Every structure is written in structure tokens, then in C-alpha cells.
Length: 330
Image (cartoon, rainbow, N blue to C red; front, side, top):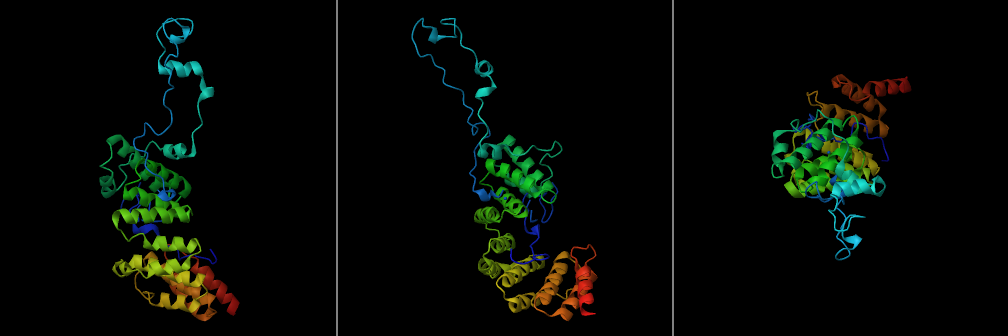
């Protein structure tokens, strides 16, 4: 994207996304919860049961001849008993095995860690899988839990697990949510947007709007990001979710070169909240950063200091930014 988005990207705290279930928890997807490509942003359709989507059907070996022809039985033994399918495969050897297609590889998914059972998922997430056959539900649950485990340390691996879940259960909202949130974490923004749209159609949830808006930003469509930020449902968001949308809207304004509008957007947020929550830290940091971009260095310095004062977990580099401004002004 055109500008540094530190402190402005929405957290994945908005949805369950198969990450251990609770909002923002990754006990086991959605930077949400975010949390976020199933993405099932690749639009993959479910393949039904695991057994038949792999193109491994046995070859039709019906005899071509009649009566005592040697074609009627096993070679050299007219009329003899035909070998079993497994014997045929052994006889043919491995050279005839076909390589896995991309879709089949996605369906297989990465290897599942032995200690991931699916029980790590939130109860609400597991409830959405109950309509699946037992073994299929267990496999999907394990891939969702694995996606939640890896989303921070290896988002691409998390995304591949979410794709494996989507390949088996593409009509379940929480699976598409997980795909979208892991796609977002891995930087696959088009796929993330498609998956979260699919999840929203399925369950009507609006929790995904900040991430969807940020995907529009990443894809170079700041106008669409602002349009989502103005959605009526934002008024009913929690304070944290509102802050996330504010950050995205301000970032989109900056993408369009509208620094004054970005500052006004941030000034409407609770910058002076007494809370030390991460979303307040990020709001203050974004405001300080935008002030500096607008050439208001003295104001920016003051707000970097205010950010550092509540940033006990060092989520930002506000202290270093303040030091740089002080050296510049001295």
C-alpha cells in the first residue's frame, strides 16, 4: 500500500474464525478474532465426502473376449480368477500413479499436528459443524484449530489449513470466516474479501466489516473502504470494533491524500479515553503519525508521548518516534 499502515490495520478480534472460538482468541482463525484465506476466497466448492474427490477410481477391467480366450481371465490362465484391485495396483507398479492436482493437494491440506484434536475450538464453532458426518466434522475441526494455532507465527500455513477445511465444508459460515481471516493475515486480500463476503451472506454478521474495508484499502480501493466505514451497522459496534473501523477509514483518507479529513476522522474517536486497551494505543499512534505527516510536528510529538504513556506492551514504536522528533527539533 502507498503508506505505512503501522497501527492502522484492524485486529482480528472481530470474529471467531475457528481460532479457539472466543473473540480474538486463537486457542487452538478470523486477524479476527481476526481469527480471518478459508479464504475460501478462492471460491472453492465443497467436495462432499473425503472418499471420492480424488480421482482414484479403479480401472474398468472387464474381459474383452468371450469363452476360453486368454482375455477372459488372468494372463496365462484362461478363465482363471481375476486379481483383486489391490493386486492389480501392485502389479502395475507406482509408475502409473497420477500426481495430485492443485485442488486435490488443497483438499488434503498440510499435515495435522498430532496434538491438535479440534476440542480447542469454541463451543459455538463446534456447534456449527454438527451437521456434518462425524468423521468429516472431526477433520474440519482439526484443520480449523490448526489454523488458529498458526495464524500468528505462520499465517500462510494457517491459510492452507483453512483451505483444507473449506474444501470439505464450504457451506459453513465459520469455515469461510476462518478462510477469510487467515487469507487476510497471510496478505491474500482479494481471497480474504471474497471469503468474508461469503461468510457474511451466510450468517449476516457485520463483524467482518473492518477487515473487509482494510482489504479494499490493500487492493487500492480506498473509496470502497470509506463506503463500508459509513455502514449504518457500525453505530452498533463495540468500542474496539468502532476504533478498528476508524483506523481503516483514516488510513483510506490518507491513501487519497486527504490528511485533514483523516485527522478529523481520528479526532471523532475517543483519543483521550482513560483505557489502556490496545485499541486506544493504536488510535493515539495513528493520530500522532497523521499529525506528523501533516507537518504538525509539535502536536505529533505530544501525541507520541501520550501513546507511549499507555503502551505498556510496546505495541508501537511511539517512544522511538518521539525521540526522532525531539532530535529534529533540537
